Image 1 (cartoon, rainbow, N blue to C red):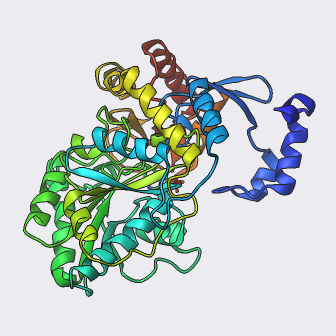
Image 2 (image 1 turned 30 degrees about the horizontal axis):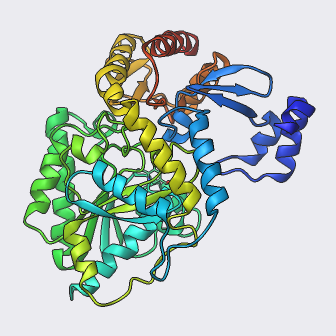
Length: 452
Ligand code: PLP
């Protein structure tokens, strides 16, 4: 903040471009256009270095559940840092904040999830999942069960394991990935891949890709199926209602673990504490991160079902895995303060009863716009498909360009929207009010008019 008071925006941008390699950024265009410099956050609003107010329609990167600028969290973290700023949780060691947080999460989670393995990010959560499921089958005496089935266009993080588990081909192309032992199947993206099928028919067909893969590879070689309840970074791909029940039917009689990547859907975004409950997924492992601390500090984890935890507990061996910052005390204090605010203020109930219905209504009102092929929501996740002709699901020839234009116009109007090719994504803080939703809807309407 000292810098932002001292230097004008263009000087900050030049300084940034000189010394900062950004994630997911084309540095040539960054040098030409400069970065957005965000200097302050308050509720659903951000302020940039020119003093412009911008609505954070993405809740940061889908993670700022309770909004920006809650000083209670800063106070809780400062108090913890004064007491014990760091100690580890390796080698039979623990500390009060991580004890309290683990109990809190076990109470918030659906019934049989009582154990948490801590990490610092969603990527680390999924790296842990990969090692944990293979370790699980080793100690069960089935070391050939190594393959993990995931889906094309899934996002499971950016580490080597996260990228490999994910299904982003452009990411695989960089770094000679995926690593061996990961098998990708089709995603349940009806709008792009449903062809002549109804959404319900397509949901069944997409789930049966899992059955085909298992039959082809052999159940004795498959460790797990891993999926986001709703694919987020892939474009808010809300599966047809038939999809998850069919996946569960397929896995019911098979000895294969089910893993829900709830890095986005965990902690309230779909109007319940966990997305697995919304879709009745009943996974063996749940990867979480993001909303656990509302982004105030980095923290994530793998929530383990009792039926897996029991096996781990009775092996008599040690899982050689962990991070220096597994269960960091200050991050645990941030998570506790965040989850306490969410409980005290009824944030999840607010999503379920107020914000998500308002958000759905707003999207429904945008569906008639000539550029909009589909406007879909679930909880506080929403996507608008931009198309040249609203009566077909064909894409623009220069797929992705219109989305980029739309995103930039939106920013000029003071709203952060994300473009995934030509899908416009919104995922606001969970505390968004009806008035703020109304502003968001009116702004998106103007943005669409100006886009085309
Ligand atoms: N899994 C999902 C579903 C995600 O959306 C993300 C991040 O967007 C990740 C994993 C990776 O999380 P992180 O960026 O904290 O490593």
